[in-house]
Image (cartoon, rainbow, N blue to C red; front, top):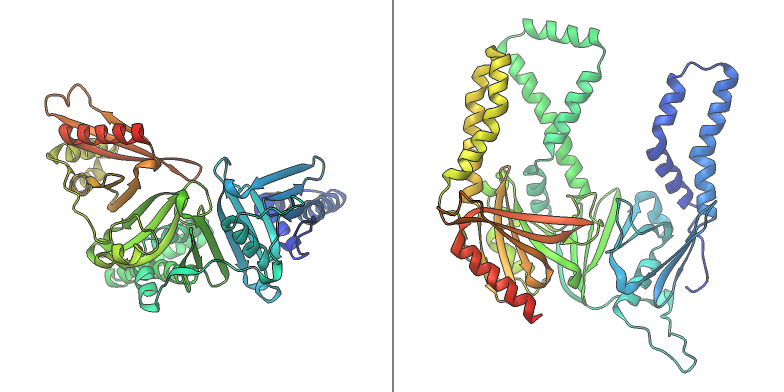
Length: 480
């Protein structure tokens, strides 16, 4: 594919949908503005140009080339842009295929590089043939062979094939249901429902409150429970369709995930671009001994998931996670190691800090609204428990001479990171003047995460253990 090509005309629909997403407020302004017939007609024509005319022009002026050495994209209406993306700079390739594109064997490609900043990907190609992604994968895995005419040998687009599958995982229906049932995503859904309630007309909400006061307490509690169940059911269905038929594949030096019912989302990332592996457990999954496995990548290919964390195993039993994941990421241990080298010897400091953070706003609340002072006691209890949770779940240690594992607890979530020394951007030891007497210190580890920095902080550790780790990092950086 060496000649510039346009994307499929169905890509215009993608451009129109993006325009509606970016400029929907213009429609709201038009419908609420008090305009005359002429003004309304002119505004409507301008909106049609914004939502239809401009996307058509953007589609018509965008062409792309997939060469043996790079992806080249030409775009721009008033100002022409020419992007040249070598395969060596590509961090991740994300493929999105909506259900209406499947019959035409089309999909959307999003290409991320490490040098790119912002929320948008480096390159976005709407409605291109599925063979385009296979061709890019082939070029990324195979160096082009030069001929006597100094031209590169180009694989036939119709016969491009990816490497041999070295490891494969597919979530079973039972695990998918567990993942949906233990997801905390129902909390945002609940907030959305509460927001919709606030948007109801005042007369309707007043009538609902009046009727509720005449109901028995049992019925009122039942209504609240039903409200929560609706939010939980919506979140459960949304999670099921989002991770429907989740698959993880390793081919050569690439990891590829695929998921989704209405939109099939496929992300491929080189193994050497993985910055860290994170094992994550919310409160429900801690009780059930389940884990979610994510990888931190220096791109935003997973930005629509969990803050740029690419999920590679939605849910798995904690005692099976390491052995299951090892064939995909071989530098991980096969069993969960002991993380006792870095621990918190005195939990009371983190409990104290949590109580102080909660006490200040609660004190102001009690002063201005004395009738609500009673709520301070349960909140202070939760703050103390959260401080104890953070201290209890702080741990870490060296797994090998090249691999560090650290664990942190925050907001009732336990995160365990496995970080190769070559991926650590910096390691910071901090000790205040008050901590010198207690021989304690804070440790901060910085790794790349999306298009920004991931700061992993372990607080109130033994100074001797932190100094040992700091010396290990200095020696490792000098040797590399």
